[in-house]
Image 1 (cartoon, helix red, strand yellow):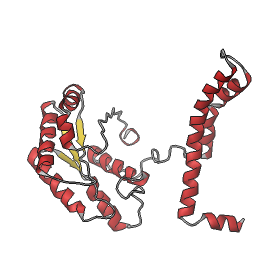
Image 2 (cartoon, rainbow, N blue to C red; image 1 turned 90 degrees about the vertical axis):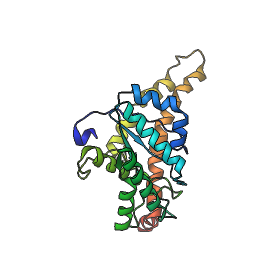
Image 3 (spheres, helix red, strand yellow; image 1 turned 135 degrees about the vertical axis):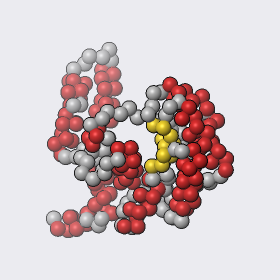
Length: 238
């Protein structure tokens, strides 16, 4: 957002996995406090989608959340969810539910599900889904972010700098990233500054956490190579 608009934003998330609008209505004080006193411009509401029930109870809860936002001078926005990979036909039910909800409340709609559906229509091979076929992969997350960016800014996400999907964008960045913990490793290994010698080892957990990030990146690269059937050819060519 800041790279494209030059504006600084402060996003806050109230996220309870697997919970829908009805849960947030029941936990009324948590949502009410944030909407009335958080000083927000927008509140983005996303209904649980897998499975997506779309009941009248869900609809009524969505209406209550939108009205609560408006009472706090916060613009309500509903994020249209996407269907499961195994059941793309569910998208139409989601579309109708959210269209009706926005018509009833006057809320805005960020059309993630429709953009998701159109992207797969144009290129069915796009790896938008996580391994479970329901949640978003890192590419799906980028599509969601790009859709929200377009909705709120009115600008296309095309041409934005490639940040966010892969923080470690180059080998140089990897070296700079890991270099920050080298002094900790050297000091902990060579200088005893704790009451007990073995207590120095506790600081090595910091280096371990940084190392996990680099190893995770390497494993992702290996997996991508295997998935694209390039790993074998690399070995045989060598």
